[in-house]
Picture 1 (cartoon, rainbow, N blue to C red):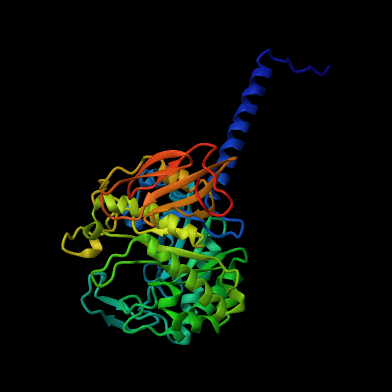
Picture 2: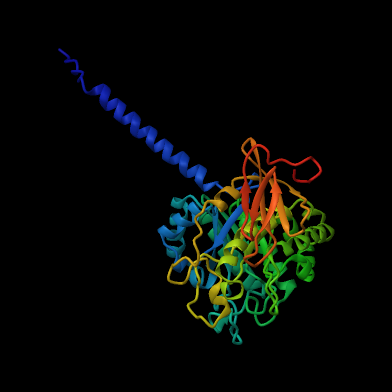
Length: 430
């Protein structure tokens, strides 16, 4: 006689618990998928606002703060010299751990593939410079053998991290002697970028690749972009990256000064290559040190740098940097962080402005009677919003009539809410 198993009165409850656990796991998986794609455009490249971080400085709490503040991705470096410690042998321990932290935080990454490697090139002694951390470095890969080795390293990284939400960037500021010592060579860099991009795509066909991460905009580095346009990189790269620093020779132009240069750079890129007509422009590094502009102005410039790029067709902006990566008060490179090297915020940031700005869709610029008043029209859901501020680096305030309201403006942007925040179709606020 076969005994029929007894049906426990607790069985429905157990099934309910199992189903609840399954639904919870599904929810967590969907949350991670959505979070990891936050700030990624349909073209697969990052959008919105990111922040540069130093891997050795950042813990899980930092990444949580970064996400909660409104940044959607982080930019960080992957050193060839630090990973290929023996020829053909890669040590991924540090990058494995950091990718895991970034993934769990719901952020994406732009990862810089850079540095020479003494197994493939000679040692160089760099001159003293505020931006130089190490005086003795391996020369950049300029020989065919060195370029091939660097490309193998890049391909290995792309294959290993193919499932991460990551965009690869080939080198950092190759137009500067401290990053391409002893002297920049556009031909060598362009060949390296083309070879590396191709190797990455072969190893991970869905990978996204940026270059050249120049220290200045294309109109200030036309030779390098012109050389790059003549290589296979022109058709391989998914986006063109550039840096938008405004401080030079004691001058400190405001963020809005970048807009005309962005538009001129776009026109130049389209002239250089037909394949660059629709290629996205990404600003992968830009910041203002508090030693030059002060803490309150730096806070205002963070939002305004993002807005200036959005208004002039730049898909993503990376603020440099999250924390001061040096603790050397006399060094101008020590003051770019939103926090001190000890992790103390220089000024209160979490007022929700950046979070809202990066969640809205830019529509157009509006004209104001006062040229110092900046007005940008955005869509937020089904409503329109106007972002307004004074083009100033001082504590000056002014009253402007926006969307039928008298609004007190300063150099820090505000969002004028309500269904009256519209324009007349001709780009004029009313």
